Each structure stands twice: as structure tokens, then as C-alpha cells.
Amino acid sequence: MNTTTDDPTLYTDMYDYDYNSTCDQDPNPVLSDTVLQCFYYVVFCFGLIGNSTVVWVLLKFIKLKTMADICLLNLALSDLIFAVSLPLWAFNSQSLALCKLMTGIYQLGFYSGTLFVTLMSLDRYVAIVHAVTSLRNRTLRIGIIASVMIWATSVIIAAPHVKFASLEIDPEYNLSHCQPLYPEETQESWKMWRNLSENIVGLFVCLPIMIFCYIKILIVLFMARNSKKDRAIKLIFAIVCVFLVCWVPYNIMVFLQTLQIFEILTSCSASRSISSSMSVAELIALSHCCLNPIIYAFAGEKFRRSLAKVLGRHLGCYQSRATFSYRNTTDKETSNTPVRSDY
Image (cartoon, rainbow, N blue to C red):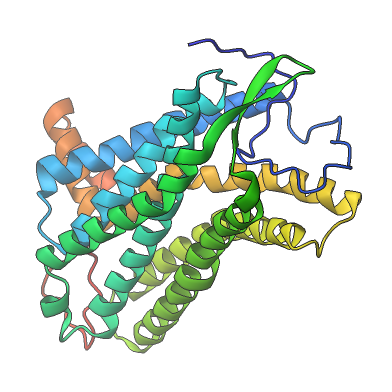
């Protein structure tokens, strides 16, 4: 594999569509190559360690007994795939195979991660708001079927982008960049499809579903008499806030790029601003893959107990279990609404 680390044109946006070819690119990038490379490797390390730990504990100790476990496992796998691809972003690879691999992983991680976060939101909604019927609707079998459908949908949507991914030669630096190369007669249509598919899934479908689910959950929790209510509310706010902060800016920038395709935003200043903002928004979105383990796993009582047992068993320090788990709460606590933690 022929790589280079001194490419002055290193950037984060994998798909620079050159919406306004008459505008000169900003000679001063928002972030330097060194900062970008350090960011990729930091997120890669945290994402690899965190998500690998989640997968290991779930498979070896928790044993996937509930739909919640299935959701958490698949989300960790999605984030793990995303994290493993990040070292490829640190170099400008001159390999077409790696270009297609990076494109496929990016698209697969985006769609599967967004859909699994939404599935977890629906699972929480059913478990808390419709607690009476939750056991019938949250079986392990339904969780497996939903997960297979999400992975299949993500692969189908990502496939065209992998097909059209190619290396575009930059004559100024004699280097190639990974860019989509669409058929000339359908180029604009494919550009709009990529942007609209990301916006439809991330901004117009999944986000409203999440907001609806968590508003309903919060209403039920505020009315409940349960000692775990405050902890559940904090966890829900963390889930929503981190997802919004990480992915909404990216989806907004994709939407603005779509307006450029429709020639609604045509000025050079707007083109430069969108390009620079997209670079930052994409970095924020990528960081989500290392934050999910903290939110969904390490903040969950069930996972923390299992992790404490693992650490105690392998490190021989059973006394440290109290450090990793919540204060003992008995199963004798009663409530009008079951606000238990499945994570």
C-alpha cells in the first residue's frame, strides 16, 4: 500500500463534490494535517477499546438474553466498524480497494449506527411507556429480526456509493483522492440521492422518532414514583443530547450541500463556508463512535455490574466492584411504573 502523510490537501470530507468549480478553495484549512491525524487515532483508540469491551462483555458474560442486549451489541459492532476505519482516514491512500473499503465502512457505519440508536429509543419507549405489553413486543427473536433488517438496509443503501467510489488524480500534487465518480448523464441525480438519503434517514425519520419516544418517556418518568427515576432521566438526556450534538450539525451541512446542488446557494463565500463547516461537522460526527460505549454501556447498571465481575475475576480485586457499580438497590423496590435498566 502506497501512502503519504505529508499531503497538504488532507481533509475530512470524503465527498468533495465541487459544487461551485469557479470558486478557489480556501488555502488555509480549518484544521492542520497533524491535528486531523491525531484526532483520528485518538477516536480510533477509544472507539476500539470501548466498543470491543462492550462486545466482549455482552457475548461472554451477559449472554444476550433480551432485545436490549441485542440492540447494544449491534450498536457496538456498528461503532467498532466505524472506529477501525479511522486509521485509513489519516492517510491519503493511493489504492482503489482501500478507497472503496473506506467509502463502504463510512456509509455502513452512518446508516446502521443511526438506525440502531433509533431502535434502542423505540425499545426504551415500549419498555417504559407500554410496560404491560413490553414483554410480548421486546423478545429476543424480534430483536434479531430487527437487527438483520437494519444491517440489510444499510448495506443496500451503501452499495451504490461503494460502486462509484474511485480515485481522482490531483495534477498539482500528483496524488489521488477518494471521490465518487458517477456517470456523467446521471451525475446530479446520484449526488442528490446520496445527500437526500442521509438527510431522510438521519434528520427527517430517525430524529423525529427519537424525540417522540423520549418526550413520552420523560412524561411517564416524571409521573412515576421510583428511586431510579432521576438516574433514568439523566441517562435519557445524555443519549439525546450526545446524538443531537454529534449528528445534527453534520446533517444540516449535508442539507446545505443539497441546496448547492439545486443552485439555491451559489456564492463563493457560501461554498467556502459550507466546505469548512462540513470538515468540522464530520469530525464531531465521527467522535460519536467512541462516546456510545460510555452512554449506553458504562452508564448502564446491568453492564457495570457485569464489567465489575469481569475485572474482579481477572484482576483479583473483588473489593473494587463497588467502584464500578451503583449503590446496592434491592429488587423489592416498588413503583407504579417499572423504570428498570436493561443496560
